[in-house]
Length: 256
Image 1 (tube, one colour):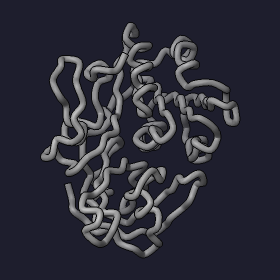
Image 2: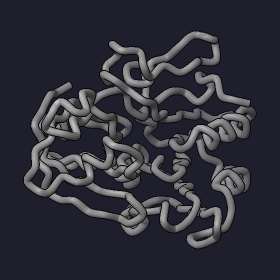
Image 3: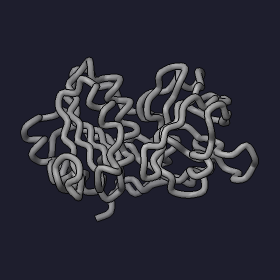
């Protein structure tokens, strides 16, 4: 874990309040793995006091890339930064998706859930068969398709609820058919809680390894404040920042 002053080298608006930042942060970039996240001080002042968590889209030392949607004050402050500005960044934090060499993996991304899976795909697509299932409400929620299309993925399936991009329907509507056709050994997923809960129900009877990356509000990012706890299947609590954000899918208690 590093506490580093990163320099913004590129900012890009992807439309509909989605942004991409390329940040020169060599110490963090060198250690980051797919699934890790960082805590970013979004303002040079102490207002807001707490840093904000952001998943690392990809690490290409000396750079990391952050992809985010403007949802509140923190992300509004972050998107207003310009090239050359410096950001106080703590990371990389949390665990990461496991290495599963030789196994066929189905990556399941709902909207911004593409963040931890993008880096995994870029790192592993040339070494093992990866199938991508990526969905959102509309084309306006689905970015980075050109970058994903340039990766040597085994197969890609794109869904949008309004039919403006790829197949029309919920991402989960295509899951059963894709599993039957592709026969993956494992799944890795990230997205809205309702989507993940539906996946947990659908994958329960499948004999596969299933992993999920969770999002949560965080105060510290390294296990001190306990603001990010979730309930596990055994009734105990897990800290998303310190024990996650990647968990076996069946380890989490999902809403029914």
